[in-house]
Amino acid sequence: MNPRDFQRSRRPLIPGAAVFLLGIAFTLLGWTSVSHAQTGGVSGTIGGGTLGDSDFFIGVQKAEGVNLSDVDKARFLNHASCQCKRDVWIKAILANATASAKAQAIAGTDIVTMMIGQGCDNALYYHACLTLATAPLSEFRLNGMVVHTTVDVLAGAYGTGTTILSGSGGVTGTTGSGGDSGSGGATGSSAGTDPCAVGDAYSQPVYIFVESTPTLYDAGTARLNVVIDGNPPPAPPGVTVMGANDALIVDWTSVNSDNSVTDIQGYQIFCSRADQYQVFKDGTFSTSVDSCPGQDAILTTSTSDAGTASVPTFPTDTDPLALINANTHYICSDFLSTSTSSHRVQILQNGIPYGIAVASVDTHGNANLAFPSPLYTKPFPTLDFYHQYRNADPQGQATGGCSVAGQPLAAPTLSSLAAVVMALGALRKRRPGRRS
Image (cartoon, rainbow, N blue to C red; front, top):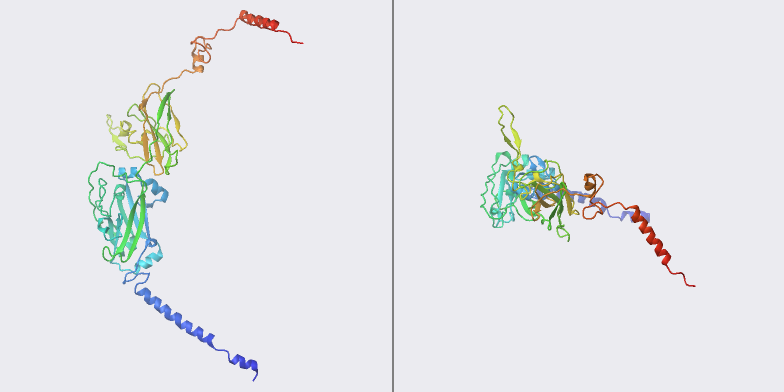
């Protein structure tokens, strides 16, 4: 026998056997994985799988059906929206096909609950949170859940032992998808403080629970932190107003000279004619202020003539509290940058008192107004050199500029000029000669 053949015959046949055995092992592992998924792995089954944050989409809507971007949401969820009790919709759906597949493996009789409050995922505070809506998982898989409430309810304090913030009001019950009625809330008691001043960047958790029994958290939990800014920036200090011709000159001090106010966006001037009248038409100036005056609405009044159409009017056009309430019908400047500390309000009427206020505005549209002392200032006509020149008698005998005691300067005579020349000549003759 050839020695090389002998050496080849001694090589083990392990590689082929290993491939065969590995194939069997992978097959068994595959059966094990399938069995694991069917008995309640990450996909969720009768044994209780889980849905997490990434499996849900939770959106905030200012108009039903239109989810707000993060920027628009920050502008909408502010102090004015809370005061106005503006409508807001919270929508929750399964985020994608993977989430839908997980949800299909969970019992359809499990209950989906939307709650707001602090610590709602803790059994100690679960019942102190506010339930907005509930629906069976079988319906949620098809339609998701849309809850209609108001910003003041969304801004309330719930959970961690507090049911509802005093004065914030309650929720009268919202309708979940498929006709399932959401649980009702309690009405908050009246308080002396502003219930909508919830603080700077107050974070309200919105929870979605999928449970077979409340407080078990056995089939899924998701959370979205909804930020509500209820604090306006500091009001600008040192506001002064000086009268000018058909105008007022307004000055103030920056509120962010030390860079301590991180969300300041700029300034806006408000004004009223006398103590209650709107000065400029709506839309004259741009604005970033969001306000909610108590009567900020168009009303329709009938005229005395029969058959004449009703006339829409703004009740705020005669609002004595317009400036205090930051009524945006009374805006008298475009939106001014943070580097601005002076502005001339023009096209006013001389001799009429105007109220002035300067508002600092943050990125959420919250405004804080400051007022000068005295509150009202009158524009007045100013007499400059050109005005005096045009109106002198005869024209051209101006009393401004370098005039003395209001009298025109006399033209120099020939005799006076001659006297000056003679005096200069005498001085030149009296100068001593140069020393040798």
